[in-house]
Length: 470
Ligand code: HEM
Image (cartoon, rainbow, N blue to C red):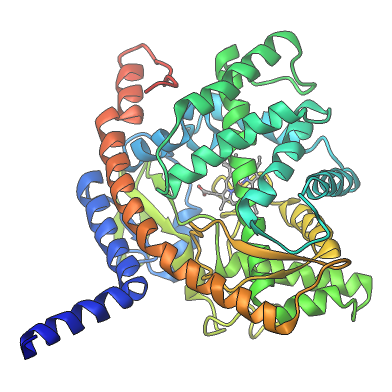
């Protein structure tokens, strides 16, 4: 072979061998460009040039930052991902009597349990799901999001219907939630048939045996089914499963933190408090929301700057905002929350109080703590995968039983090294899949224009339902 031939072969070998190090990043950059192109450039970034981090909360909490869906091309994409029934999903309803009715019902349903009842319910559901694990005396490999999803399906079914969740309904709920989150992360397409099966079950249930808390009277029976599906069997289940996957993966990849929790070095009270700091630190590093958007219904005046005009699309970027008030240099350090000087100053895991914050903010951390304690009581967690905010890998992890089989140090090293390698190489096909499927879904969402069409029709006098098959 000639010198040039060797050079080219060498370059190709290096390129291929280093694929996992550069391809996913290049694909993400390309995806962002394609998303912007297909979805249309819009929006005022916060934090950003026009809204610096210091003004983030003030602008987010301004009464005129209250439009939720109408007037933003981005809404078509969210409506597409959250179908069926995005038009009655609490997160995407415009302010007004319908929103008030829906938000009140959510509050009533969630307020039906005392802290002791939440603790009992989450503990019981976590135990049941962990009991089902195949051969729980041996070391096994799981994906943390998949491990946790049935727990929250059972919990939120019982929160709504106040009775234990039958197994076949749990499968419908996880089928629905998994499909939504998979499409949101662009690792798979939507499967509306899976979602429709849950809608059909809920409609039938509401017709014969509705839940104890009356559902919003401003919604039709079909919309009530969509409301329950969207808020409880999609958002609640997806958010809690994602939050737990992040928490458990953070513990699996930070041995000293996990050891401190499981060794019982601290008193029960203090241990509880330490776990809360670990949860805060997890939500600080890995906020569940990427960008939340609002459409301004009026002008937002600012000191020393041009006002933000009515009709602007505001893009509130959680990771950037939370990163702006962090002094830890990216280190995972739960103890920095103990000291006011080191505690992150920009921390809004559940949104801002003045503008439609998360209705679960009062007990989400409590329920995460209960589920995590149950997992840690049974297993030591081991993982070597990359921990990113979007976590498309669903959190591969080894569960090592506290009693029964264990891993010798050599075997542990080998399994973790193999896991790291597999995780790294899995990013190559996955990022290409995300690029292709994501671009398709952005294009398809724009073509269908679910939000655009809905508001165009409702301003013409007839508000259509966004049907499951679209
Ligand atoms: C750790 C878990 C959770 C986190 C970190 C979280 C985070 C958030 C955030 C940041 C928002 C505000 C988004 C915005 O401003 O547009 C939000 C809104 C919302 N969340 Fe959660 N959430 C969690 C769990 C839940 C659960 C369990 C439910 C169950 C009902 C829920 C239901 C909602 C709803 C309905 C909204 C929309 C509120 C409205 O617009 O009125 N979330 N969540």
